[in-house]
Structures are given as structure tokens and as C-alpha cells.
Length: 144
Image (cartoon, rainbow, N blue to C red; front, side, top):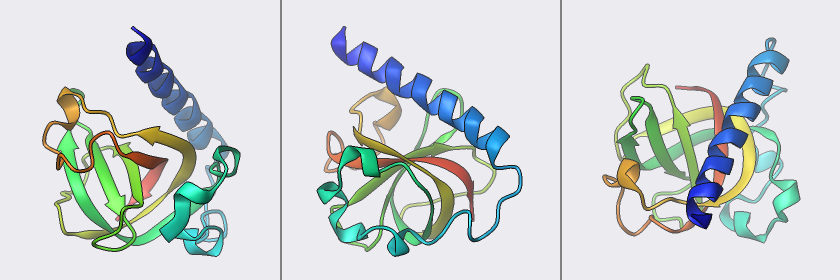
């Protein structure tokens, strides 16, 4: 029950922040979403305080190491800054463009703290070595 409540809380938080992003960031520019490497050391994301992990950023040319679809036909993605990194970034986004493992993508969005990558039915196609790992959550505004 506790795990279910935590998951529901994360989903509700994601929806609330997504709405805020849609309303508050109508006019975005490159300065609104600076490269994450100008604000954080992406190789040591776990060293940051949870309260610091709320910022608008661009994850430029990060590696897709996991991709699956959930029950509402959205992508669930796991990205890393380098191919063999253990610093994971977890997000959900619409399926307007095909994404596959091994591809590099650029994501603009809002960091939303940390989470443990859920080992649930929607993530069953992710590599088992990323399930239950700590990750930085990203609320996606756009990707290419």
C-alpha cells in the first residue's frame, strides 16, 4: 500500500508540474533551458541535495539506454550522459517521434527531484540493471 501511495504521489506531482510548465513556459528560449552541464556535474547527480534538483535544463545528446511504452501509449525513457554511466535520468513523454535504445537525444525539461526507477509492468522492457536504481526525474517539455 505504501509503494502504491508513493507511486500515486509521483504521478500526481508529475501532472501538477507538467501543467505548471505548460502554463508558465509558453515562451521558451535557449536561456530558459540551459545545458544541464552549466548547472550540474552530470557524472555526480547523486551528490546533490534533493532540493537542488528542481531546475529547467537541456539534456543535450544524452544516450537512450532504456525505452518502453506505458498504458497510455507514452514513452518511458532512461537516459545517461555517457554510454556506460550509472547516472540515470528517468522520464515519460509523448510518442511523436520514434526513439530507440542507443540513440542520442536532446531533451528540454524540468528536473523534478529523485526517484527509484519502478520495477512495474510498464517498465518490464527496460534493462533489468536499471530497475530499482536511483534516477533524476525529468518532466519533458520537448525532445528531438
